[in-house]
Image (tube, rainbow over all chains, first blue to last red; front, side, top):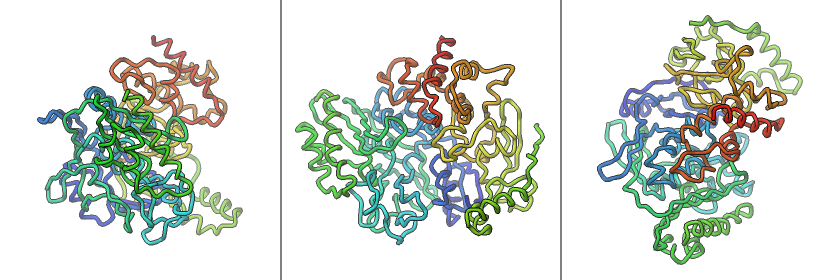
Amino acid sequence: MRAFSLERASDPQQAAKSAASHENSKFIAGGTNLIDLMKLEIETPTHLVDVTQLGLDKIEETDEGGLRIGTLVSNTDLAADDRVRRDYPVLTRALVAGATGQLRNKATTGGNFLQRTRCPYFYDTNMPCNKRNPGSGCAAIGGYSRQLAVIGGSDHCIATHPSDMAVAMRVLDAELETVDPDGKTRSIAVDDLYRLPGDTPEKETNLKPGEVITAVTLPKPVGGKQIYYKVRDRSSYAFALVSVAAIVQPDGTGRVALGGVAPKPWRDEEAEKALPQGAGAVMDTLLADANPTDDNEFKVPLAKRTLAAVLQEAGN
Amino acid sequence: MSKEKMFEINRRDLMIVGAATAASTGLPATAYAEATPEAVVKPDDLASLDDTLKSTVSFTVNGEKHELSVDNRTTLLDALRERMQLTGTKKGCDHGQCGACTITVNGRRINSCLTLAALHDGDEIVTIEGLGQPDNLHPMQAAFIEHDGYQCGYCTPGQICSAKETLEEIKAGIPSNVTKDLSGPIEATDDEIRERMSGNICRCGAYSNILAAINDVKGQNA
């Protein structure tokens, strides 16, 4: 691990300022992904801003009838919250489908959104990777790509986003609240947080330098059957090959987002209009532009079957 | 405040061992040394470290207050093992995948390898040493012995800390991936226990006996 300075932030704007005033800085909260990457020298920040003391660890009800989740709420506490279990069960299901008890106790809501890909070539510093070392090439394309993206990737990168939580947040229309170094706040929809790789896969989000996530808001509950179905190589502590987050209403309409197939949670509001016609009709639109490799072309039919299983469970 | 003791191995001995290892694998010794910067800086060497690269932290470990000056890079695991000689907590993978380093911080189990000591100011930490001692075992420790819940024993401290918290988390109603009903109380079934223990790997494969030990303690608490 490279040496770094460490500054404890006392309020969000000061955290943003501290991060923006150092060239190679990172925020640290749970640290479960960042410290791992720092040990491997994939991440080499020279300045860490400790945001753990900002007090943003509460879940409050909003005036609109939704929830406002502080960025530091642990994955365990978010999954276990009575209101989340009752009104947003797809979020609890997605959270407990990820990682382990130990990791969920430490990992935070904001940090979960910002975790890095688990592409094996991103992790192997002996291999080219445009995300880790821009311009060096992509060893995954033509390499071992079973886990990787079938849609949304580019000729420069086919990494997937690893989060389960973010897939549920996308289907729930969650928005992130941020503060920048000037103290300006804004809210960002989950879909607008993430960038597709294009020819700059090292740029993963639309956050500005120093901009810090302070909370995530959930709109008023929409009811329906809420299901998170994760398909993986072993039944616990593994990343998704394909996951489906779905909200299915009694009349058969609803929402669908996919995990494990793209560089961000994959949802298309047009495609999900076909939900009453069944899984095939949704996937024919949602994955119409899929460009899988020989290794991962199985994910396209798997996604369709997983959604079919979800619809069966929902009773539609 | 406990007084810090150091192991009877010094930096020079370590470098000699490191150089010998490097020589035997055909790597130049200097390249080897450069490729593995020391993250655990001993107190004697901390003085030479720039002030911005180190922190002072105080926390409670097993009820005893400690104040340490640490290189910012020091993980909580390395601080416990190398600076406080609490070597019951084991370093397995050092990447959060095996669970050998599991401890509790403020009543929650975590991987101590994936957090920095400097981030734990004011925290209450409990390691396997704080759970029980040979003459006063925690029921989970006694059950692991009773049911032979180990073979080599390396993963055992992490397994025991995790097992104790697994039962606590079920009792507290924290759901898991196998919890069927999110609205009611959670029953400590074999499936629940196995799922919640998936972050603790046992390469000897003592899983069935580990499960028996946890079930035994669950029965005692019922």
